[in-house]
Length: 114
Length: 111
Image 1 (spheres, rainbow over the protein chains, first blue to last red):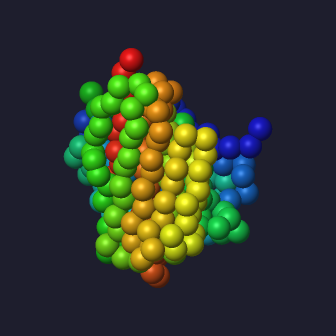
Image 2: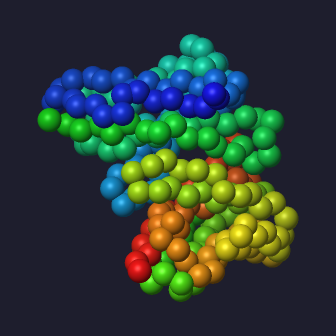
């Protein structure tokens, strides 16, 4: 069963703590993305990666970091520098071969700050 | 940078009424895509439009791409409660190598 998995579904963070959100895909897609969605809001791009070992900042990269050591995996770390991390985090992937770079989304991780 | 706006932000209709959301880009797009996000869920790809003036239908949903390839619309005929969710457009334009998502339109349908 191909797709994108994100874990955990819910994550709680204490003040000053770094947390890492997992994103794995078995679609053999080259590109992967991280978005942040606040309640009732649209999708804001945090980071994206077009190829292994390379990634670019999106519109709201401050306070976040990523790595892309494997094609299948694109973990996102929410650092203590991110002052308002409570949000719904969505990971997506796309294939350069698909017209228009159609994106496939994972189920998301809800991050709450305690 | 490229901006994609959608109107309205929110619409509440009674079941059976029609619904339309509009998408406007600040730059010319090579293609436009539409996604639906159910409450508590994740965005799911609906359709892609590529040609100027293109119209595509999926059952009660009609998608249009403007002649200038800077705007698009999604029209739902005779809404049902299963249509509830947020509809996003997303465009690929100019030298951009990634999609830019619109601000989304949240649709609420009541009996």
